[in-house]
Image (cartoon, rainbow, N blue to C red; front, side):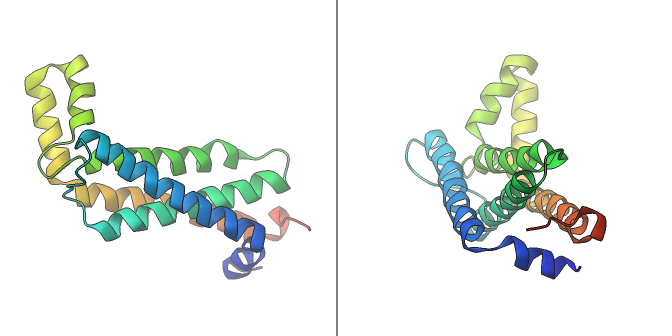
Length: 160
């Protein structure tokens, strides 16, 4: 069974609707965190298409995890895939920050490191936000590929 057949088997109407709902929820989570940092003004150094891509890829990862979890008893997807999906969406909202700094990130770092170190790390993260978004998207794609590969093997095939 190929990975394409696994995807076709997963995306029945119930899981397709779940995927769309999660993608919308993740998009609003990212923009909500962004608006909190910017007092309602959505300014970000990250191109909008990367925010859409992160929301979509994270939702696919969560959908595959939900499908896998609901069809098998002992499953590592409930920890790894769901964690990666939610963590990358949350990190995307924090990292998107504003045009110059990620306000939440600075406040968290300043508590443990101090002002100078927090400013340095915050500046590096803000300047490299598009590349970090790309890494978050890649992490989701790797986890998704891993689980699709597992689901496509005859020994792990989920019977309906």
